[in-house]
Length: 118
Image (cartoon, rainbow, N blue to C red; front, side, top):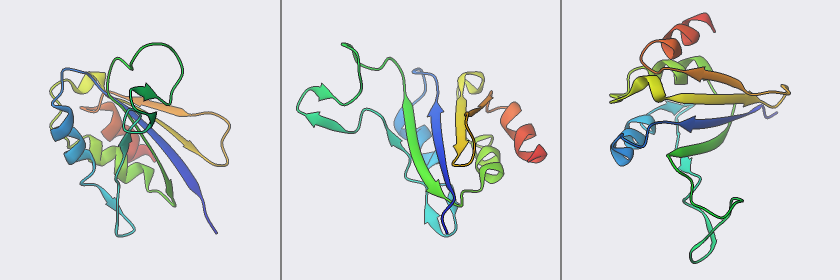
């Protein structure tokens, strides 16, 4: 039986995006790699993004959905990433049986505390 969790990760555009995502994706669960993806990595056709609006996204936004995901361990992992601006890291998490996303911020402190609470 599946139990799906959707994760949305947002952080400052001043970060070294490639390096931060490499660190984020080093998290593994159930012997699977995270492989979280940028919302800008999927294009419908050349130079046309799949999301709405007339402009490009103005900052890194990553998303993934996972089965039987360990949210507390993931939040703790984000607290170990070498963010330049941890206070601008936000994570939205929604499990399939919930109506709303839970919002976590400040990877330097709040995410670690939230992970401990879970």
